[in-house]
Length: 375
Image (tube, rainbow, N blue to C red; front, side, top):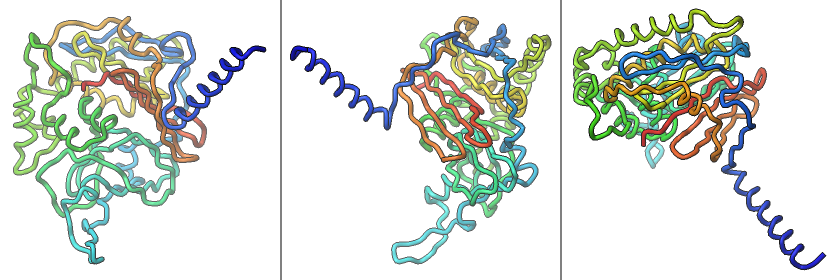
């Protein structure tokens, strides 16, 4: 064999070694080829105003009864969430403990205890109310049953109030997609609060009509409750100018009609969401039962986002929805807790996908979020 062959072989080996080092932190994700939606089937769209929802169904749904949702756990008392440190204590440089209610650690971290016998599923953007301020879960994760008290990363969605309360209850709310994106992907408190106040972080065309719920009305709503600025006021305040619950109720009626006659064995396991002609979001679960547990608060969150976006009349097609489910060929990042869960983020351009996979009692991807980043 000549020197050209050995030179080429050496370059190949060096190239493989370089890729191996890269894969340790960031690995290119190359999914198996095949039908974009795999075992899933996308139904015809449900449309209302500028919101389009494509129901996603499957006959291969998994058994997820072993898992507990946050709302279930808080309602039953099996899950307890408290302020970190109880009284908001912080240690000075000379070792003294003092009350310090404004530190980032106090605002952005709570303590969670899972007393149940089931793993607890947490999704970024789920709202817990009470304590000293309302917070949202910062990142998807699973909490093992009987685990030690867990330091839980959160984001504040309520400015102004800092009361003496310590325990949290279920709010049965998940923040709308623009806010969820800033929590789940950006992971920055300032961006989370900016998305709360602006309603949507999506870029608007210069010729786009005004949204039904413009930023000024959202700003009045969240800031209009005494001296507190609370995300929950978006749903409760008349300042937003439109009945969010009425919008969601109309979508729900249409959704029920669209999913009333499925094929034998099929269950709705998720949705793909479009605003105007842009497919922007999807939430897909491992089972119909898990989807049902989240659907009400997801629908209301999609309604808020729709009302905060321009009232465009373009409609996304089912082909657009199928293209959105196309497997990504981007870079992958993983985090895990051995024997409990694996979190994975894949990015390709402005599309991001986040999977949360349980490792016990069996390996199972419980939820997949896919989104078209707004910024």
